[in-house]
Length: 445
Image (cartoon, rainbow, N blue to C red):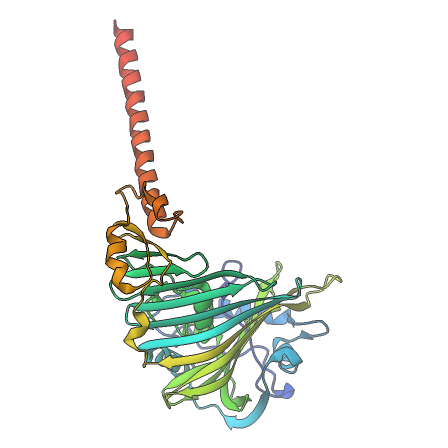
């Protein structure tokens, strides 16, 4: 789910005021950075609001308080405190007397430095989803790697009954793309690179958050959980005291519009350890707890960068029957990493050969063939394969085996269908024009 940036009735800008202070130090109307102090090289949705208008809107939101799980409501800061003490909070949080040392901008630059420090990445992780309504768990297993424009993705998913829904591999070696289904023993080879980062890999990286790799441009900035929101300095503030999260000292950055972040600074890089997000509901834009993200079990990679080996994301929704705004737990996604390599990915990761028994649609060679046992027989199998015609059909395909439609074939069929529609439309309009010309000539006669 995206972080909504909404201001007034139009936008829902990024969120919440955490309370890193004691109750006596609670600040319901934080001092905000003025429009002049906000970054002058960025034009965003806040620009349409004057400082007075923005302050008035914030006061309206904070006056209505916030709602968390049952029996938890009040000021936003008190709700955050109570949620941090719950068992499903996933992390140990402790207020300290250590002063904050970084500005919002320096923390934002540290988050950007982390992703910019990664030239190549390989990670393997398990994703499990547990939903309260179904009381069932779905599991996914993903290996994702990139180096420059080269990319490797291996993903398999299990249904609640343990059956595999799919087990696929995608490889782009810098020139050709390979797609392989282990379950169907089918594959394809094309000369174009598709943006195929799995949703699970994108979801995981966006929660670290790391927007890097060949598909980085495909990430929606609104999905950037940390660096993007911090552009809007006018609605964020830093607590004067640090908080310990699982033993790491963190700056606490919060917005009265619905977000709290705990960010750990280490060297030139910064790391998101925890995030609480609220959403606005109703005509009065009342804040209710939306989700908690906890990045845990950080380990040093290459004695340099830190990486979380566990990420837990819990969502909340209105589950009460008493017409209150209290939010109950809805579902949890947990990502558990088994392997991470940063800036040390081997080139061999992006080399791929189809295993024996695979039916391959090769859009480069224009042939459909069955991979034989023994690499010495491969050239003969390709030479004896069924030809793929320019329209994407394989008339002799049944000789190799039942053709399983793959993206290259479907792509060609789509193009053919589009051209067919154009031809039909053109003939129709020519008929109409001819009809009216003929009718006019008859009238003249």
